[in-house]
Image 1: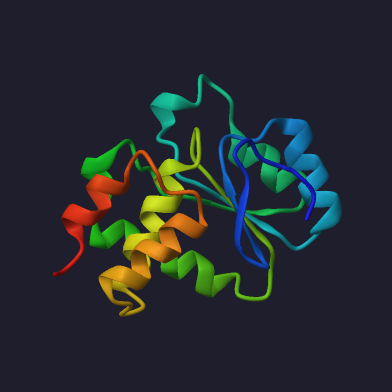
Image 2: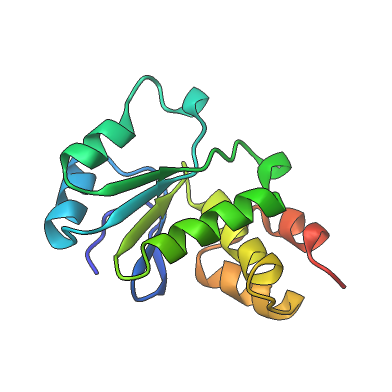
Length: 145
């Protein structure tokens, strides 16, 4: 896939994970994936007045917002919300982002454990495939065993 995100990782063929896309990058993603979906993990306080949801919808993309401000928001509820977004758009390409990609990778790892039933080792591998590094200790502290 083309490079639509800073720090882009593709842990699965239909998942693009990474940092904040520009409006031009969203337009490129929409052109290549007309039925795609954007999942934004950045809370409103981080968006500096830019209404990404409006831009995404104008481009024909579905848009899901799951605010994850930091480690305190790496919760089972947010992992389930991410799982719901992935399930609801199972046939679409998804662009999942935060500011750098670390919250994306952390939440994917925790979803793998808490929702998908992966072992702690498997969940960490899932997170690392999505670029997990800086938030790894926070993920490890939340995983069973």
